[in-house]
Amino acid sequence: MREVLQLPETHRIGIVPGSDTGAFEMAMWTMLGARGVTALAWESFGEGLGD
Image (tube, rainbow, N blue to C red; front, side, top):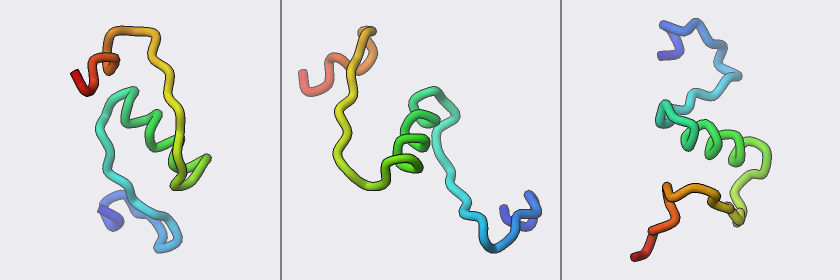
């Protein structure tokens, strides 16, 4: 992948879902690092976890 994209060795490559959720998760990891995060839901998607 690095060769195809012509990325230098100093860049990291991450493969994530091509969705808003994947983009949000990648942004949170990049900005906050590995730590606990509280997420709020305003829609039905994801609210039923654990049911």
